[in-house]
Length: 100
Length: 111
Image (cartoon, rainbow over all chains, first blue to last red; front, side, top):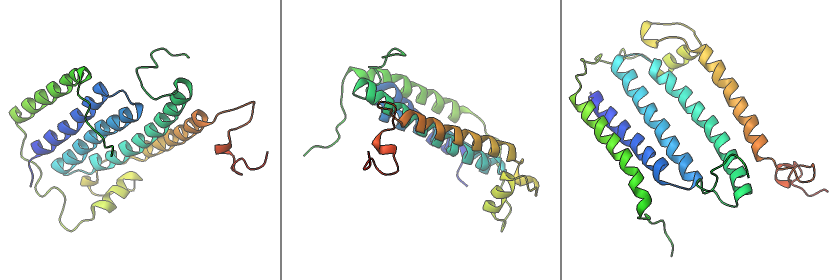
């Protein structure tokens, strides 16, 4: 059986790649992808610890996290569409105020 | 030919925070003591998929199925519907009080 530390390290790596993307990217689509990476890092942890404790709660909860990620992407893509219409681009640093 | 390239520059400095966080998590994880896991994790010959299904709809079962999640299932259901409505609301564009062509069922052919 693979030690749970390895899963935690993998999850930390995926989360930090997502965080790196959020901190350095200016493209809103890349932003969205990076946030997805961070959510999926949480999923890895949930499933790994469900296996570790011999309990299915973590695996079931990971399904809910996926549904939540889908909802987030739906709203995120809508916001990016509005961003493109109002600023003629999807650079997140352009939209610094809550108005146009 | 164009292909994606990693753009180097000053904007990458902000990513140092992410690398630092990774180092902190690695250090904390490798120094932590994890108690011995349940071995085998799940009973032999039992269907894990069936267990997830039972836990999802509160059908009950052995203790390793975990707690029922019917309430969370219903809440996620509402959240997904709300997200769908918000996505359509954000995506539609009204020009002169009418929907854009992309959202019309006839593709905007009839005017």
